[in-house]
Image (cartoon, rainbow, N blue to C red; front, side, top):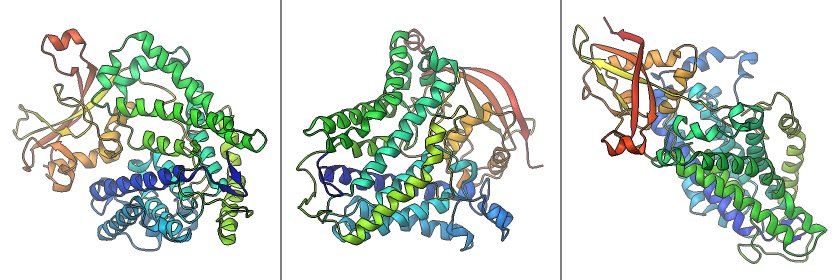
Length: 488
């Protein structure tokens, strides 16, 4: 790594990718919240955030249970939620366009910190609908992006290294979770099932599932290599201080390229919201390109970096030295926590996903009937989760369909969650905002007489079954798990 003082002079291009792409993912996150938060968590949502905030009230011990949110100081209303989302969209769009980056370094800093605090205000009251690891990953990436600086100086080395540390925790943490998790990851059979049973398959998931078993075993081996071995080499550019020449930087770039390639495969075969996209973006932090970007090196101790900016970024580095110890210890702990935050500000978190893989796909299908005797039933269809066996799954990521994801978790629990009962009530009321979350309302906005939930087992159709006229899926009815329910 060509380092002159405290400036990562070869990482100007990496900064461009980090700032603009992270801002683009915040743009998607705020759009997702604008479209979905109110029917899920608004004043009349399935899990109303105002009820949670009223419960928290002024009690300090309850406030500590929430991560920081503006809505503890400003009373929540759906209108204020919309205002926050629209403001986030505008700020994120400006950063994608690179407008604040043409100012002094504190200009993009304030913009990213505004995105970070604004989105954390939403996540903190999002309850189970915002309980995914990629929420805290986006928050931490946005916080670090705030200190990458602007075009009139090269990015600070300490912030680039902190992005490497974030990438390491994401990849190595996920790898360790798998090794310590289900036997299927150790006997190399996990991906024999996962393409079919993952929460929300994509348009190429069936083709991936039907690949030979030896390929699925090779996938698992490649995954272990990419997550347990390669992340250590991300830090190779640091060795350029002692090893002259391009080799350390090339090693770091190759390690990043391997991780990017594995994440692209996951993007192509699934719908994991922005989890894979954030990982791809932060992997670019390890790709140094000499002479490309806005690196303005000179002979000064921190070339082109104002003294106040050096002090700020150094303070961020010291902060991470303090708060990273729990995350480092967790990586090698026998009982490794997955997607855990060790401080209220969700910095230096622990990450990981899919330590175990489900081997059978069970879907909860919601049906309604307008008959008094409930003899004829019609299905509600969701946007992303499997329903109609002939419908090819669509690609939604990085957009996050929160209701569809929660529907996947229902069969895995011991009972149906409280939010699901309220969801069925909204269907009985033909609640327009709730129906807008769905792909198909079989009653065209009219309220049904009854609703019920039925479990089905789903599997991808084989090539022979497709040639014989089967759909994308083959399903078998199991049981009525809830209902029929009616308003009267």
